[in-house]
Length: 244
Length: 134
Image (cartoon, rainbow over all chains, first blue to last red; front, side, top):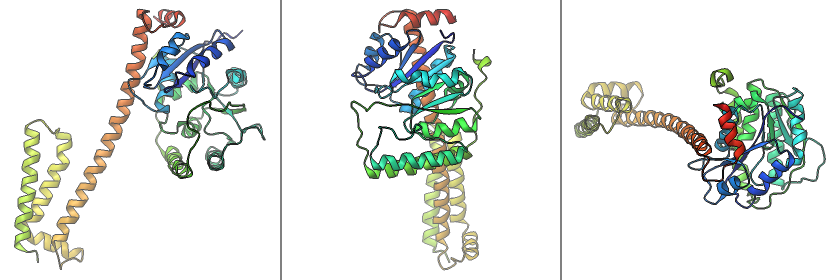
């Protein structure tokens, strides 16, 4: 039985169809987990459904985008004194059954932040479309080069964090395509990052049709953001003691 | 040499710009912090428009003595770029502050609702967490 208090951070934007099941799954996986759903300015009943299923709900007054929503979740975790946090997406692609793999390295004190990677385990069932695959490979190589550490899945938002990781992301988290850039942030703050292989589920709904042109634009933009992140002055996360 | 008509027109335009900026400051519709750049812009353009000798000299330095008013355009464009860049930094800061405020409000609102324990079907667990903290 774990002694730490664990919070599951679930960012959600217009996910009234999926959010209830995710909250239930997390609680079924471990009833001691608290769940906070960050409703990123949804126009549907996401907040109500999440609350009915027993999650704490933080409703943003307007849509901040995934980065701002996730950061809100980590701020919640920090302020409410959780020792461990896991992040799962509100669309159901992250399976709570994989959580023990993510939590293990953090609980053993081997890493501050653990990312669930779809590619770390070698040949897996997950085969994204070509344009996506090029982008994923490009960022994996680039981030690995910049951080001098092998990173295979830079776009995964399936993560477990200890108190140090929570404090960093609560203080500073990128906005647009945050996971890639956050990897650089973790490296610059000298936190220990680890990857574990996980399976992810297919999105049940939502757009999977990222056009080629948009992929190119995305790659260009994020590459630029990565290079900027490398040279940017970093903020100092406020000391935990001073916040408590 | 600079045509006299251009000097007159440019002087009037610069003067108008300065007057508009001053009036906006007087009416509290423009903060001094943002007005400063505009005042510098207006003043520099006014000086270059009235002081024809200086305009001709600068044009000579930069190799456009055939048409000195080009310096007026160059100066105006330079200042516009500086003002725009300044706006971009202001905008970035405002966007960051806006995000921070939205997050703060949302987190505080959640605490209020959890404390009141009413509506929204907030779980007992999170209410107890809140009590525990205080």
